[in-house]
Length: 454
Length: 177
Image 1 (cartoon, chains in turn purple, green):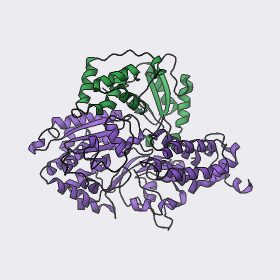
Image 2 (tube, helix red, strand yellow; image 1 turned 90 degrees about the vertical axis):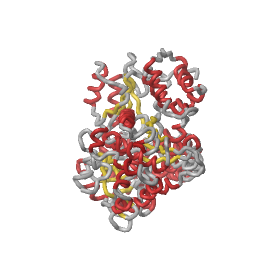
Image 3 (tube, helix red, strand yellow; image 1 turned 180 degrees about the horizontal axis):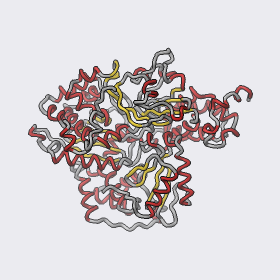
Image 4 (cartoon, chains in turn brown, blue; image 1 turned 120 degrees about the vertical axis):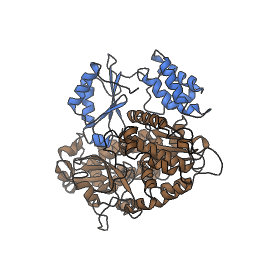
């Protein structure tokens, strides 16, 4: 059993309600914070080494320190609860089962930033969670933790929950701000960064749910205590949402530093592969990050143990590594078709592209179409090179990272599973059924590739 | 817009709905009421058979004191807003990777066959429609669908049968108001 920070109290019966949450020490970090100098709170968060849990991993305390306090304009904290990256469902779990933890983190963090009006932007599909948060916020107002002059401190804070309309792009922080302003979710060109000109052109910090929910523990203990949990620069605990072909999918909180092997195979976590089938690939951090083939999952290319940390999951760069990303941990066994899955992701990114930048708007569509052609037995050898060329031309050439996110899974699939693409092209009659590898896993038919020359 | 106006929608802005919309608008500072657009559109849509006619979109513009085009450009951007009638019970199956490898396509095909519709179509009685949607954040509980404000997870064909039967008997609550 590792240390639990976010899930410490999540299984207490009734913890969703204010009374039970408060009886179990809830809102103590607000009491402590209100007696502190706000900048000292930011320093504690810096010391903790907490890195943004939405996917980018940028240090939270450092991000806070960029907020413009000199202009005198109103400041805002916006919580990014737009969670839409395929494979990721950790924030939903936290908000659904212990909503007051996020609200407590929002109050403490808003105080540190000097924000008097803050929002939680939640994806519109999580409508029942939106209602849960709305009720929890009403309870917090009634108990005097929100509103004017909170607990006699002189600090005012209004907090509201805001629902989106079904757009992955709104998880990008500037698109989220546009959306919160009642517009289409088109990302803005940076700079200026939100810390200077964000919501309504006011200084704004946008943080992920899990990041904000970690702040109360850091404040009640210390940044130093937090930094001792985990491994190296991967401090603290991290939520992983596990899906795919494992025995026990779900959301787990782990201390960073555990081996991937233990996480995947121990009964406490994923419990090993469903039906004990062979492991084919792993996406450790949401659909955007490169898929790792079997031989690079438990060991890095150097033969070291692969660990559940930012550094180890990225070891080897994109050639032989991946990224911790959002913690969306997707496991594929030998029945999964990499071509079909890559097509599925390209369809997703094509659907979700906002359309501002041509490389992304057009490129994601071309990738989807070419992958569909290959998956349906109409591809040519040349298509693989065209795909490679398209993804390379999207990456780095767009305003926001959606373009990169669309390019990386395609690049990784070709890099590690090129033979599966070639198989689809050479043996169209073998892949007519969409369950082709369920009926006949690739490993069993791979030998055909050696017998045929094209 | 011409093609969209072919569909007629009865608009009924009840006092309770007005009160709720005004509450949502109050969450944003004076002069920033446009920010309430997405929450307001959800409320209007939920109260009007889950779709937004141009006339209803114009109502949203009136509430927020913005021009109609500011509403149209938003409605056409976000997938949750329906611009033509959908089934009273719209079964939205997630078809992204983690659901797809757990037979989401088979379960969705089953629902379509049972209801006699293709994805995107509405049954003749107006009760049901089926659509495939992108990742809903329930990857560990696949396959799944969204119906109104709620998720139905770990789907099987038997569960789909039960759900359809419950809808027909009026046992399903769509919205948490």
